Length: 161
Image (tube, rainbow, N blue to C red; front, side):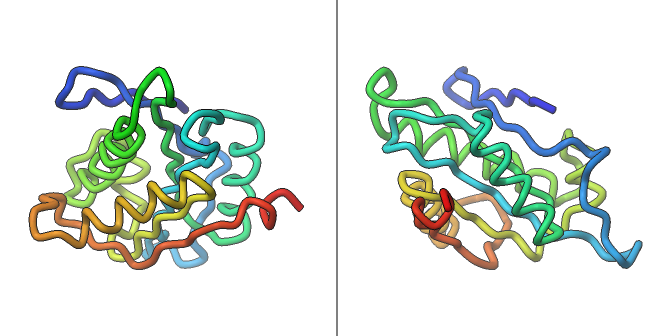
């Protein structure tokens, strides 16, 4: 499923999450699933959350970890200079956080995600962007009202094996 979210600057940021029909199901019906926000790598200038590589990789994380994953796609350099990739990924994080109050636009996240267990992960440039997201959440001015349980910095060579 592909969703579009409009940002304050009237641009669009794409994101996807895995098909709910193949979604992980908690072993305990009353227990919600942790959330993983994954940011793809690619030296800020190549790659996409929609690529076969990242779709398969994030799908394998979901299957082995029993989480709900949202994979952030961002505008690439050099056509879109930095900080576009950081800002786009921050918008994805804020979109996910908007579901924590129960009023988000995606019923899967609203109903099944545990917003007390949110993790950010990324590889290469995505790890750098993930660090930026965690830093923004740690500031007094983030305004999102959601805490992060952990940050996973992935080494791309380990992923490609």
